[in-house]
Length: 557
Ligand code: GLC
Image (cartoon, rainbow, N blue to C red; front, side, top):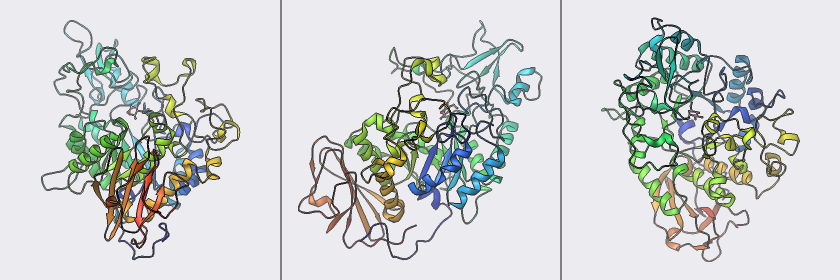
């Protein structure tokens, strides 16, 4: 049987299929592809590289912010929610991108940043102009504490207090991130209405959904109480963790707002295709699943995909991940779509966290678990974190808290396309240095190499697309020995078994775990044969997807 070609009845398509059965790919636009030689990636570059995404086999592209911005936080400080920064292109270019992506059956997901604007946004310029300004209450203004100083002990994620003093009007404004990123006041209905219009602006232009930035922080305590001390805080740790974020994150009042956002995007869903919300939520499992928004009628009215970052945080051991997957599956409300993430523009790359061999196993895990996978650009060729010398640091996080290993430049280096100058990323000078391995680790070279990471990603994605058991099937935890993580995925009569050896020694697999008449549909080891002679022993860091010889799955999606 060729596992990539099935000849069965068509599965009924639903409007949610693209984000439930598909794969999301994150593009960090500054670093993906430059089309005008200024050393900064742009929309023209993304358009030129759409065929890479098609050949990879992903379904949707999430693009980090492309809006006009002073770039204090590289686009997460937005001065106009309804425009395109000239460094990235134009609105016409954006429309062309949507059209060209859709022509290739790729969906476009934008980044929506509701928590804050840039301090140069006209709303904030007005708001800070006078206490009596009609937009004053669009942001969070507070008087100094009784003895002077910030109104409370809240801290900014990027260092220092979450409050900046405005001498002209004698008050502090709140900023959860940089002082150049003042927080909007989501308790103000005018702010909510204006931000929902932003969503509609892009939905009318044809976008298919949004990744919503720091969703859990948009509502703050109405009384602005001090956060309590964190009993687990260790001296020397990032001082941000000195207090528990009890009063400025994940407050109950955020849930009705999430439901409002959802209703706005639902206005644009139709029978063929729904619009999606993906929430950025660094929360423990029990709190994370609340963002599906299970209501009293059993309906899910929150974000469809609350980002599940557990694989980024967890210890890289079979038993830990087994526990995690089981707990996550158990915590999901009925009908909720799971999702998994290995990396993003804020976290160390997977190949650096677990090493190059284990990164292949991680790819198989991500692409065979139940739930929507999100890939981070460059992970498909095994890109690693790049050490950035102090005088080349770009990220404000590193600049504000140097030497703590918090900087995010290492995982944001330019995409490595080819052996041409600057890896084919730009004809100019890249805004951030490239990894040293670009002459050999690049898309072009790996496309020629059947044993490459790219070949593995393509193979696994093709298998996932072809096999309903993988793209929509059930998940069944299996008990395996030692360092092996085992689970089955099934759809109707089809049952595939995934076996992942996290150990540094060969792992013999018990026949009880294997399908009858098993064949290898995919392995992280390019030399592994399809047929299994005798017993199966996985090499260190090897993973396999097993099917049965007579396995006939229904049609591809
Ligand atoms: C999110 C983004 C991060 C940004 C921050 C502030 O966490 O992913 O890159 O710096 O929000 O907007």
